[in-house]
Length: 230
Image (cartoon, rainbow, N blue to C red):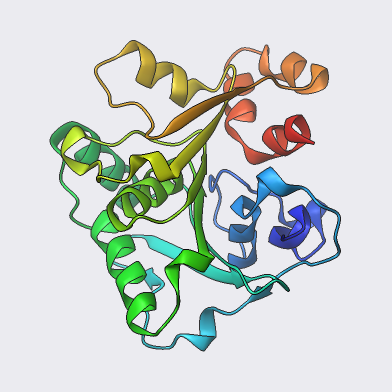
């Protein structure tokens, strides 16, 4: 299993941007990888994205970005970037998919990437898809379509037309107080896919989460999730 701090090159102070709310070094994408297995094993994982040169991991036109990591046990984690609220591409992808079911752009990109990896002889039964927020929605879309084990966090929901036949392979951890999860539950917007596991924040994170405006953003991030799951 990958160590939690794989996503920050063992430097959580410098690289923590777990919700994808800011543009950062691609290694932060590993932050979504195996948060459910905080192991302290020392296996920080290896970025093996470059070992698959024919696979398209990023698309500047659509805003899609992902990285592939491999642990010492040989398992792969495909980590998919979350939403940047300042990116019109991300906003467009999330909005169109939720409201109309359109997969144009990032949703088509993630499915193509998984197909690319399988065509490159990567055994998807040894791969986990993961992501948070928009990245969680993208992971769930591909995982439910391709029958791949998927772990998401505070994930964006999927239009009913976009939920594949293998939604049982998806597990979504959602923080109590996460604004995205709450909005999806209280409006016609689609809910996150898969088995839903609510997570209580630590006392410290709950206190921050109670602060008007900024508290919700805090609870949407992966840092509070990681602390709660330890």
